[in-house]
Amino acid sequence: MSGFETLLPRPSRVDATGGRLPLDENTTLDGDPAAVTWLREVLVAATGLPLRPAADPTIRFRIVPWLNGHLIRVFPDGALVEAQDEEAAFHAAQSVRQLLGPAAFRKAPIGDRNWWLPCGVVEDRPRFGWRGALLDVARHFMPKDGLLRFVDLLAAHKLNRLHLHLTDDQGWRFEVKRYPRLTEIGGWREGSRVGVRTDDVTDGRPHGGFYTQDDLREVVAYAARRHVVVVPEIDIPGHSQSAIAAYPELGNLDYPLPVWPLWGVNENVLNTEDSTVDFYRHVFDELVDVFPSEIICVGGDEVPTVQWTPEQAQRRGLETVPELHGWFIRQIAEHLGTHGRRAMGWDEIAEVGPLPGGAVIASWRGERAGVAAARAGFDVVMCPEQKVYLDHRESDRRDEPIPVGTVHTVSDVYEYDPIPADLTGDAVRRVLGAQANVWTEHLDSPRRVDYAAFPRLSAFAEVVWTERSNRDLADFTRRLTEHHLPRLDAIGVEYRPLAGPHPW
Ligand code: TNX
Image (cartoon, rainbow, N blue to C red; front, side, top):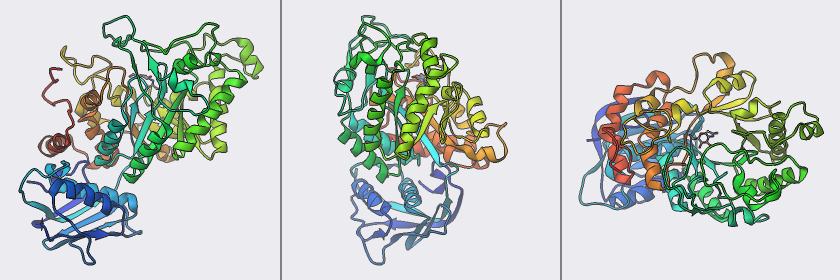
C-alpha cells in the first residue's frame, strides 16, 4: 500500500480524500515544466507504461508563479500538479514517484502490477535553501558513474547541494589544463607499507583517479537537471600535499614529497610566495569555468603553520604567522570575486584575520563558529562534526565496519536542528541550511559510501526540508522502515541495516 503517509521527507500538509487514480496504458502525462520529461523517463522505465504526452493529460503539471512551493491534487480521474517554478515542479515529480511505491524506483518493470496514485492533496515546500551533502572524492576516488548515481540519490531526497571535495593531501581529482602534473602525479598515491587499518594510516593500497573537465561538466549538467548545484572545493592552503608532490615549488621544503599515503592533519602546507598564489588563481580560473555555482569552496581547514616564518608574515604586513592562513584565503577569495563568485570556507578561516566580503562559513567544529559568523552578518552552512558527519560510525559495536568518530545513529541525525537554540533574530536568516559530510578515508567504494550515508542521509533530508514543528521521530521511523528503505532497496542502495552492521 502506498499513500501520502509514505512521503519522505515529510511534506508540509497532506489531506487524503480516499480513492485512487489508476495508471494504465491510456494514462497520459504532460505539462510545461522540464520535470515532466524527467518523470516520464523514470516512470516509463520502471512501469513499462507509455505515459504519452497529450493536450488534455491525465496527470498535468503546470507552473503557477504565485504559489509557495508545490501543490499536488489527485482525483479519481486525473491529477493536477502545480509548482511555483521549475525546481518546485521537480520536487513535486519526486513526490509523485514516491507515491507510486518502491517499484517506481526500479530501472525496468518486474512484471504485471497495478499502478495508482492516492486521491487527495499534498502541499509542500522546503525549510532551507541549502540542503547539502559533501562527498570526499579526494581520499578515495569515486568513478564518475558513482557520482551521477549519488546525485540521483540526493535528488530523490529533495537535497539540492553536492559539495565535492576534489583535492586533499592524498589525491588531486580535478584536471587542470595549465598544470597537468596535478592529476598525472597528484592523482595517484603509492601504497603505504603499513598493511593495517587504523585511524591514521590508509589501507596500504595504491590508489588514484581523476575527472577530466568534461567529466565534471557532465556531472554539473546532470545535477542541474535534477536541481542539484555542485559546489566544488579545492582545499588551500593546507590539505595540499598532492599538489606539492606534483609541483614541489608550491611547498616549503627543499626535498620532494609523495602524494601522502596517510590520513590525518599534515604540516606540508602551501608556501605564501606570490608565484604560489598566482598558481592557484589559475587553478580557480579553470575551476569556475567548469562549475557555474556562485559559491566556490576554498577549504581553509586544519592548517598547521610550523613551516611558515614571522618574516613571511611581516612581508605581508601581518603581525603573526597564523594570519598568513587568512591572508592566503583572502587572496583567492578576492580573485573569485573578480569572477562574480563567493568563497566558502571551513570555520577556521574566521579565526585567522578578517573574513573576505561575501564569505560563507561552513561550521564544522561544532556550531559556535557558525553562530558567531551569522551574528557578524556572514552566511553560514551548518555541518557540525558531532552531529552530521556520516563517515562517523553508527554504533560502538566491535563489528561495525567503520571504526572512526563518535557514534551517530539515524535518530541522532534526525534529532539535529540547523538553527542552534542561542541563535535568534535576524541572524537566523544567515543560516542558509546544512549539509551532511561524507569523508572517505575509510570508504573506498560506492558500496561503502552507501553504507555510511544511508539511511542517515534520509533522516538528514527531513531535517533540512521539513519544518521543525512538523518533525516526529516515531513517524519518521515508521515511514523509513515501511516505505523508504524498500525504495532504497529498489534502487540498489546497500544501506546500513537499522538492526545492526552488515557482516562485511
Ligand atoms: C576533518 S571536516 C576534516 C576532514 C576529515 C574529517 C574526518 C574538515 C573540514 N576536515 O579532512 O576527512 O575530519 O571526519
